[in-house]
Amino acid sequence: MTLHDLAARAMHVLDPEDAHTLTIRALQAGLGPHADADDPILATSVAGLALPNCVGLAPGFDKNAQVFGPMLAAGFGFVECGTVTPLPQAGNPRPRLFRLTQDRAVINRMGFNNQGLEPFAARLARRGPGIVGANIGANKDAEDRIGDYVTGLTRLWGLASYFTINISSPNTPGLRALQTKAALEELLGRLAATRDSLPADAKVPMFLKVAPDLEDGEVEAIVEAVVANGLSGIIVSNTTITRPALRSPHATEAGGLSGAPLTDLSTQMLGRFRQAAAGRTALIGAGGIGSGAEAYAKIRAGAEAVQFYSAMVFGGPGLVIRIKRDLAARLRAEGFTSVAQAVGAG
Image 1 (cartoon, one colour):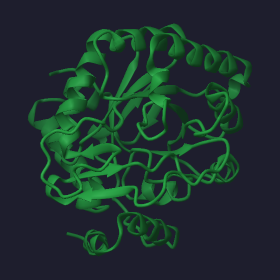
Image 2 (tube, helix red, strand yellow):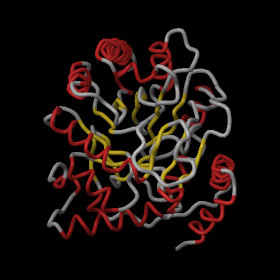
Image 3 (cartoon, one colour):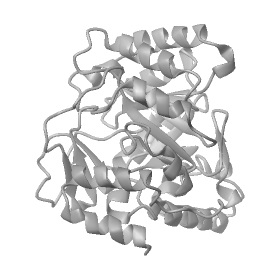
Image 4 (spheres, one colour):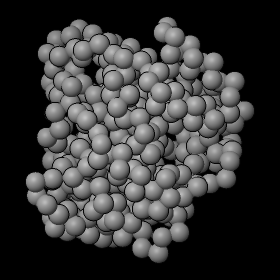
């Protein structure tokens, strides 16, 4: 266990949100870990993005694009910043972030708290090498929520390596309604038209992030809308509003549940998207990854790359190195020479 991991554990005496703020400040001060060169077996390409390794940092950690450089240096193959909304917003009242230590899980009802597009854009404009994505959302009180996504895409065009359209947070009232067929077709149609009107030399992949709590028929409708509007892929999945058996005192808190209890649900949902997509769109797996075995399960279920965040609350920043090492060993043990060979092998 590294000193960085020990420091992460020591922060458990702090309120979770205060601990996160302190972590961001430490990373800005240059106190983050530095990983060695990646194992070549983990390199892959997703929707045209050449990733040095297939393990990415999920959004929510670097909401304001403040520490994507240190997190790339820590060993992540790509970093997704956000969710960012056009205007700054404070989010929901505190407390709004809860550790469920016995369950190795987190419940959050943050509500897209962020500094807004302008400081986010300014930081991305100064970025160096590495794959850095922008996760865009809508302000809580926006009269035209689809218009907010269009604004985010337009303002950050040419600054991000890719975009993720986040319509799956449970903490902005009514946001998940954009996953329904008619609303989704309008959203993706307007975004596709905007994308096609922007400079072609800055064209980058655009992904849709979905919830794990979808009804029968919704998976197929989402896939068809994504394919019809020329998006590059789907990220499966965001947090869940369901509550599997939990032991922690905070188990009844409202918000989205992430971490270990989400593993099976999100992997099953990923498999459903794999079947519905039939190779027509890229898939990235997220939700409940805390080990190389869980990352490998996502890949075998159809993910071309994976993302995690919540497990770092319990495993520390060195967890990404351990996940990559274990994943590489599992790929070799199964006779694969690349991540791409293992995609959908399950």
